[in-house]
Image 1 (cartoon, one colour):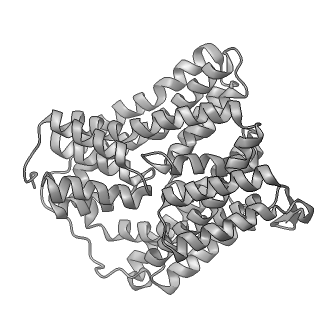
Image 2 (tube, one colour):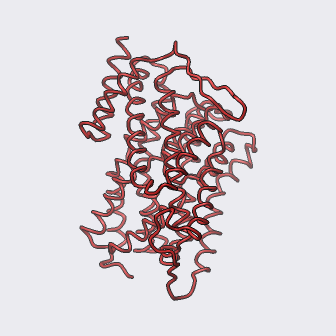
Image 3 (cartoon, one colour):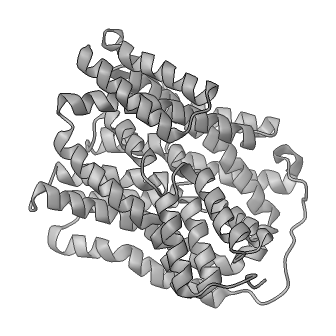
Length: 436
């Protein structure tokens, strides 16, 4: 299964630099862009190989579009190509996000800036609702998947169970169901299809050893001079953990990340996570780049012994490193197994169950965002095992509610693009925020 027409390394690099600059619109748009550029127009990758690789990337934690880019680069030019394609897909958005995070840190308390982000929050709420509907329409194709999504929502929103437990538990359950009742998750083939040939264990072990070291290297550099009590260590440890359980993309993990960043670490205020996602929506590259925004603010606000800006840049760089280094580990370790994984029924069942659970996770995020966008103050109380959110009705923000309603009309009625919606919402936020 060699590529139809292989490019030079320079051609590959130029193409992925272009893809990285143009990859707006979330994973669906990014994957469509790569398909057009690399399969349809240049013929570098066969259609069936592209789809097999996409299935593998959907199985893995982390941004599937970036991992697909790394796989294509690996397929065409080995490790060097995978590294170039994966990095060039991320670098443009990372640079833009760093600049926006720096601007946000110094201007967030200004009236005009707060008014601008009043509109951004409303736009983000509509975009998250749109993601919920799209993913739900694709993933909830059986009664079992719909029940699983509902259970995931209840477990997160009302029972406050750990996000990693929900995702991993759904995967294990899906693998068991695939073996016993594959019809419950709409699997058409219940027999594993295993291709002939030797198993590529040597390549996998080498990739795991090398990329585990690369992943851990900055944590060693942080621990040696600063110790494990410094904010940079907390940032690296938290986002390393997040990289392992980020199934379903940025939308799925955002509520968990927000709750930890706000409640456990105190790095951000509740509404700032919506601001971060709004910034990520306006930049090219994976939406999970919102982690860089969190890392920057966390280090910026506890900078010792550095200046705030230097600490913020270190926090952003460390966050980006531990978010994307695991993506290369997964791809380089598992890419040689792609044909075997494509025919594994239990693995498909696990993926289907995780995808269904992710719908419930995104529903949790939608409800969480809606509360924190429309109400300035949202409390919590415990009733037995239940965690209940208690918004302060006196803090209801009619401006945010009005903007959210208008944005929903534009997204679902007029079918406007994300960029146009964000533009209108920010202008509306400036007008209402400064006038009222």
